[in-house]
Length: 361
Image (tube, rainbow, N blue to C red):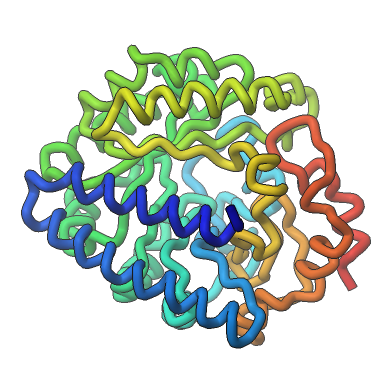
């Protein structure tokens, strides 16, 4: 099966499952049904562009909209890459809310369905979220630590169903607080309780390592998330951005183990969507970054292969999303077969960052 067929099929399955899972909530069900129809049109649009222009348009983006964060999590890739700081003055210049809005309007016109919103902490940029939410033909999973969700954000999320909070935890209270700070787990659980009470669709993101793999994929843990109303579990394989933590990154055996257990959980839990990143790259013919399946937009509009590979020769503000997809750097990476490089865990491009840096003009 071709990659585009696989990814489009995966999106259809995700949206169909999301629709089934919210049938008891008429408002959410109507939204999910509408997005299913919208994404069918997007799939046809991507196929037409591929046929007429020879341009492969990925179905999703990752966009870092904030350069600030209220936490200092151990091993944070955003801080190690210089994206996240304690104040706006310290970080890279950020795009305006209108610029982000325009980027996503173009992305939707090309048939892009999703943009994962990251940072920093994206909920520290309410101004950007408010403007982005107006792009109704895309869904924006907001990868958040969950500590800023309160009454005003609940009102915002009730109004904009295309903005989907994905709350990051590390498993247990001990594991989460050890990495993210004391009391963070309890605050994240409180946010989940608020979202469940409002019957809003939300998910959780878990950085999975060789140490917590068994725990965070266990029935007991998934049952706990389900009891909080979580409808989506997003496992992100740990990338050793912090020296001395290489032992936490997955080997090929761990990747295979993860994929096997996820297949089991997808069968057992029909009311939860399970996703993993980057997942089994070999099955998909290599890394999906560099525009092959997605690319990353930095806070200043830099088009980068992925969040773990912060190198760029193109800016989406000047070149647009279409221009960014034709980035010379992205083409060099694919031509050099960098997407098939061997690596020991987490992210191919992070492990080969020196080679990538040399490709930048």
